[in-house]
Every structure is written in C-alpha cells, then in structure tokens.
Image 1 (cartoon, rainbow over the protein chains, first blue to last red):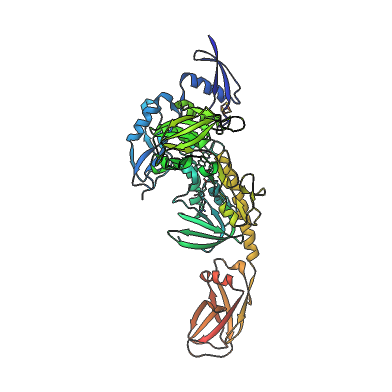
Image 2: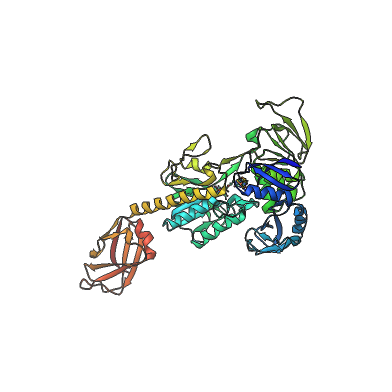
Length: 122
Length: 425
Ligand SMILES: Cc1cc2nc3c(=O)[nH]c(=O)nc-3n(C[C@H](O)[C@H](O)[C@H](O)COP(=O)(O)OP(=O)(O)OC[C@H]3O[C@@H](n4cnc5c(N)ncnc54)[C@H](O)[C@@H]3O)c2cc1C
Ligand code: SF4
C-alpha cells in the first residue's frame, strides 16, 4: 500500500524536509531533496538506519583523563547502546595518536572506532 | 621558549580562527608569528566539540571537532610558529602592546607590528536572561557542561532540563544520554527551533527527548542543589500563559541560549564594535578601525560553520602578515656612526637598518693618538654599550676594525647614532 512519510535528511547541515512515498520499506518517490543524497538517505533510513557516534574513552597518564573517539563510518542505530557499553570498558595509556583504532570491526560491521586526536602523556 | 619583545604578528586565541590566521600570516612572509592561548593546549572550543560535522567544506570530510583542529595545529607546528600556552592576554593598546600573564613567563609585555584578535565567543549566562527563583548549584551553560563531560571526565548531573534549542544544547542532550543521564525536556521560548534541524533529528528525536517550543523556565526550585524547574508556555507576546505551568523534577539546568563575541580585550585596544552583533566593525580584510589590528572568527560574529571561521582566519592573517611587512619596511632607515674619544673617522658613516640581518658588519677607523697599552674599542648608543673588542695597542698609521655581529643587531637597531671610541683598558 502506498504511503507518504516526512523525513528530515541529516546528511548535511541543510536538513531538507523530504516527502517520501513508499510501499512498506520500498521507496517509490522522494520529493523536496536539494540533492541526490536525499534519496540515498531515505532508502537507508527505511531499511538500515545508521548514525555517526562520538564519545570518549578513558586514558591513563594523559594531558586529560579522556580521549574522544568516533565511528569511522555510521553504525546501525540499534547498535549504538551496545557500542557505548563497549567503549566504557576501554582504557588507553597515553601517549595516544589521533586515528588510532580503539575497537576494530565492532559487532562484525566492519567499522572501526578511532581516536579523534593525539593525547600527549604528561 | 625564549620570549622576544617584538613580533611581526601576534595572534590572540588558538581556535580555528587563530590557527588559520597564524598560518596565513606566516605564509604571507611574516617572520615572527606568535599565538597566545590561555588554555593549556592549542585548538580552542573545538577540542570539546567531539561530535562530527566539521570540515565538510574545507576537507570534504565529516570530522569531529578535535580532528579538525589537530590538522591546523600540525601545520602551525610545521611552519615554526611560536606559541605561548596557559597565558592570558590582559590588555592590548592601540599602539599594539600586548600585556599577558602566564605561570611560565610571569607578566610579560610584548609588542607586535600587527595583531589578530581571535578570542572566539562566549555563552550567554543566567543573569543575561534573567531567570527568577533560588540560586542553587546545578545551573550551568551547555558549553561548560560540554567541557566537563568531554574533556575533564565529569558528568555534572543525572536528570537534566535544557533551556534553549541551540545546537550546543541539543548536542549535549544526546551526549548526556550516551553517558547514562536522563534529559527530561528541552524548552525553547521561540516558536521554532534555533539550532539545525538535523540536530533535532539525530540528537533529540532519535533518543525520544521531548522538545517544547514556546516554553520557558518560569522558576528554579531547590536550595543547595536544583530539585526541579517550573516551566510555562508563552504566548505570541512572550507573556507566560497562566495555568500552563509544569513542575519538572531535575538536578541540573543547562542553558543553551546563544553565543556572543568575546570582545573585552578589543574594547581596551580602542576597537569599535558593531552594537548589533557585539563584534568589531571590520573592512574586507578584517581590519578593525585601529590600523594593524585585525579580527578573525567568532570574535567578529558567530559563524554557522567552522569551515567559514577558518576561511576568515586566512583572510585576516594574510592581511596582518602583509601589514607587518610594510611596517618593518617603514622602520628601516639609517643609523649614524659617529667618531668618539680618540677616533678620527669611521667608515661607513651610516648603517642601513635593512642590512642588519645575518651577516656581520665591519666598522673601520683610525685613531687620533697612539696608545701603546691595551685598549677597548667600543660602540655606544648613548650610555648603553653595544659592542666592544680589545686591542693590544693602537697607532694612527694602522687601521682598526670593529665587527658588529648579528647578536648586536637588536641593540644597533634601537640606536639613532652609534658612537665609536678607543680608550685605555
Ligand atoms: C561551547 C561552544 C560550543 C560550540 N560548538 C560548536 C559546534 O558544535 N559546531 C560549530 O560549528 N561551532 C561550535 N561553536 C562555535 C565555535 O566557537 C566556532 O565554530 C569555532 O570554534 C570558532 O573558532 P574561533 O577561532 O573563532 O574561536 P574559539 O574556538 O572559541 O577559540 C578562541 C580561543 O581564544 C582563547 N582566548 C580567548 N580570550 C583569550 C585571552 N584573553 N587570552 C588568551 N587566549 C584567549 C580561548 O581560550 C580559545 O581557545 C561552539 C561554541 C561554543 C562557545
Ligand atoms: S538532501 Fe542533500 S542538501 Fe538536502 S540535507 Fe540531504 S544531503 Fe543535504
């Protein structure tokens, strides 16, 4: 059955308000997207919604007690809570280099969690 | 680090605006570029903005704030730009003297040929928006909570209400949820969102955090610590609508009610501000009304995208670098060399300041009377001894040479006249 759903594209700061015509999870038409990424986003959002996640992990002996980390690619939305639980268990030792892999291939998604900055030892 | 007294360009603040300005000034040809930062490291506010969304314009990549900053920090280091960290600039004068204080260097007075103001912006606070009620602890700006949560590892509460739907507030709502806190409500007095719609989706909707438009905090409840807030709906004229009050229990209230350019220092330097935005009035190279003082980034007005702050920093820094080079050319002129005690003449008679670079300069002279005992051959600027050397004897028939070396040049430059004398030791 054909349905219409409003969706806000979060792929860029513009945040277009998309009018999506779909039959269940099958996209039939996407209107009001300012670029073609809007269609890709709508399709993904209906079948496998994903988000970038940024958080922190503990670090010993560093300039600060935490080092920020992020998902190198968006991870499936239902995995966010599990990821946060995993990140709470991590403790690094300074010095840390930005781009270091903290967790590899999380939950078999092929996505790595990497540090966002250097953390010099003090 | 040894502190010099005179710099081509001094940049105040090391956020993306300041980093870009320093890089551009150096690339424009300025020699001595110094960044002064009050924090213990370079990077500015982005260091606490750990979420992604930065760099889409400049790098065509979606980076977290610290990653974005780090790319510019690396370039600053590679270019040999000097930095003074943990140093607070207290005052600037229209003549471009900079007064600063730091643990390492104590109180210092520096001078610059040009200055770039890059102090960023600060958040509006509770007194600025006049919320009535008690004054318990547990009321913070969203940015302060962001620094504690993301950098210092300290979660300021368990149950939050956020006033204001600005981006920092929404981003903090998600961040606090990630850390296991509960965000009870986001209240926005305007009839529309003030931050980006994408942040409404990925920070509030995704985590079922309730946003109420046209609502505000009527009263804060609690004695030592916040226990609840009373919210209320407002009408088109911003008047509270009686009967719409609600008590929302919480232990922390975060304010995300806007940013204002940080310009206390600018005012001291005689920089005129645009009363509508609180930032300096600037020309197309971001020069303020004070010649040689430029401004870059959120100190001018609050930008939407950090990428644009960087672009503005490049423009201001480049102009500041060029300004400094012109100033330096004006300063160059000549110094007169004068024959003093027991000296008949000295060649050359003049020194071009522009030639005081890395090569020694020889002053050749003849004495009036012979001295058969050891002597000092000295160059003085008034009573200040600039350079000297010893000779075992001097005779009118034998020419005497005194070399001015690069280590003397700072003193030579300050002198209008150098007097050369030969006296017994
Ligand atoms: C809490 C907060 C969160 C923000 N989050 C975002 C965001 O998520 N995304 C976004 O695009 N923008 C965000 N912004 C806006 C952000 O400020 C800009 O995008 C960007 O950081 C501006 O760069 P800047 O160089 O102008 O200032 P800043 O990054 O603020 O840098 C200014 C620097 O100057 C230093 N300074 C100030 N006064 C002195 C002094 N007297 N002496 C020495 N040093 C001094 C400060 O310590 C600071 O390091 C945020 C702003 C704030 C206040
Ligand atoms: S549709 Fe294109 S322009 Fe619109 S928000 Fe999505 S990515 Fe941005």
